Length: 95
Image 1 (cartoon, rainbow, N blue to C red):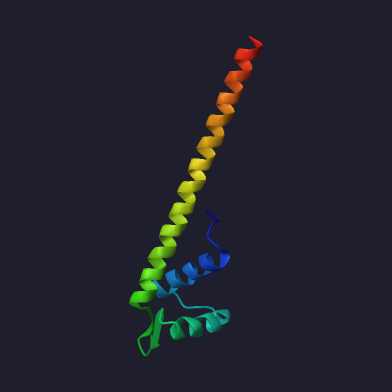
Image 2: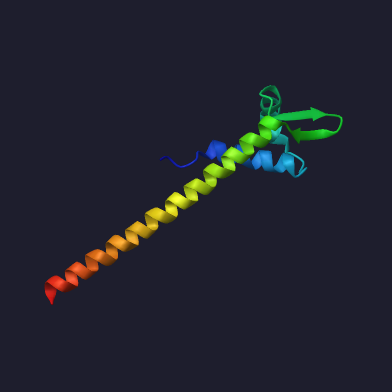
């Protein structure tokens, strides 16, 4: 499984900022327009807010980040277990 892309992490960050009511920076204008056009956010007199699609995408990206972290943890545990097993085999062979 490939790790989540930097673009998806950046999108998740922007979605979080919008959800928390944090003002987007000047460079976010292009992404803001693309998100409005794709139906992820609404931009009206009340300001920016996530649409249902934006909320669902945010949840999906959050689940992906959590899954990536869990997969990394499992890989690290396996590496430690293999190193321990190899060390025990080497000790038994020399002793």
